Length: 137
Image (tube, helix red, strand yellow):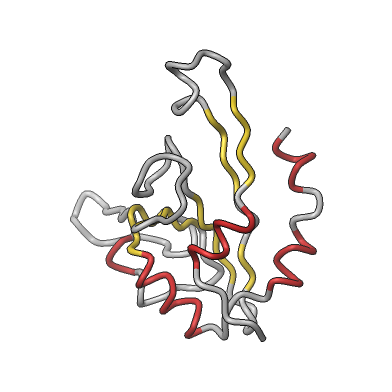
């Protein structure tokens, strides 16, 4: 299994659509999308970057220092502290760690998560994303 860092995955798989021809707005008016990541052990998560997302930088870039993770298939302790948490009125934490977004997760942490789960299964990830362009369009 080839070990791919999250920045390599982004560089090779980010689909960007420019939504405005206005030169002053072009950098802000983009839609970006990455395939849903499937790891070798079956763990899955969405990783996204771009202008209106919880990533750093907030644009299409060669490298990112932080990314937005969403909806992992299982509770992952390595990213738990980044989760958008939800509390009841009595301040009890009721966060469903598989049904939330994780803003600005450092790429170093994301790479640790990928390593822990055996790396990205590129064949399965890309197989599942074949219909992505039709879904997003």
